[in-house]
Length: 271
Figure 1 (cartoon, rainbow, N blue to C red):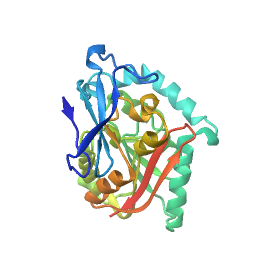
Figure 2: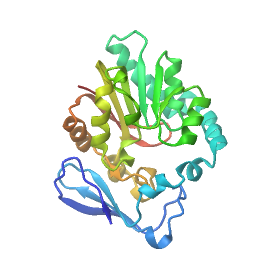
Figure 3: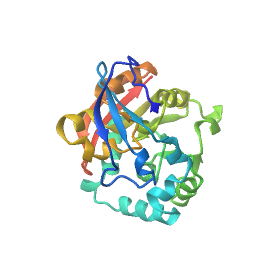
């Protein structure tokens, strides 16, 4: 059984949520029903939620995540077009882009800015940032996702952090991880690997599902914030610990309810 660590690594965990079957709306990853049983443990110190399950979650990504989620490259483009055309009041991405650019403008930045989006997915966020004058770079491991990103005009795409050479160190005014860290085995290592690429005055922007709010105010058994691919459930305390342990000073943190109805925790940080 795979076990994950919370940011404080106290080991003081208690089972709080148990799933015996796939919840409605979760992507079909063809997990045998007998292996589906899973649960979340909550840290009594930092409040972080960690997944414990029989199924090896890495198989979701090593097999065919794109096919399970979008069907094909054409399915990715169809979903991309749909999200890009959402009215602003219904768009999580347009709200995110506006929020980030407001924060940057308050800091007095006005030059051409470079963005590195780790886990860019469909590429909606970097595409919208480009409309604000940003030059977007993206990191995505799947070959079909890379092709899709280039097809929609995100030309600077790398398959891993390691593929980006030292010439990019200090280049990026913003490094973003939007709904990514909850999927990662060791999210702290991802942040540490990305930090050398941040410019001296640059900002780190992180969004994760707000597991604490879901647990307090909603039914986690029915919420996508606790779908199987989310091996971590962050709280303000645990996200603060994760960022500070990586050497980031938090300049803003906020819990919001997005247009899509997602509970989201967001934070800006700098070195």
